[in-house]
Amino acid sequence: MRVNHTGEVCAQALVARNAILERCQREVAVEEYDHLLWCAERTKELHSRPSVLNPGWFAGSVAISF
Image (tube, rainbow, N blue to C red; front, side):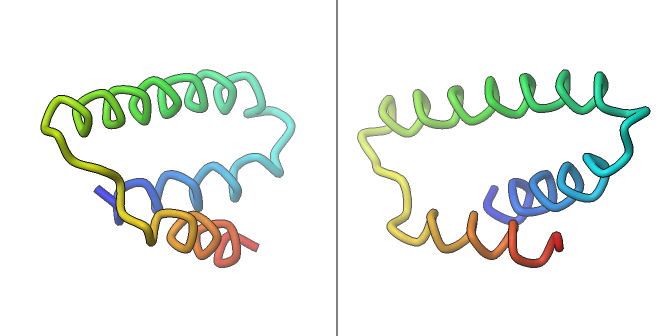
């Protein structure tokens, strides 16, 4: 899941520089947000917790997208 999310963040950052695709990018962002909410709900259902490394994964995704 972390690799999938990392890829999503990187792809969105790369495409976001193209103004023509801005509308599609916003739709993808909404879908990704819904997916993250689902993952958080499912984690709670399983009586688990997110990894403490999540902020690092996100920061790394943003860093390699530049």
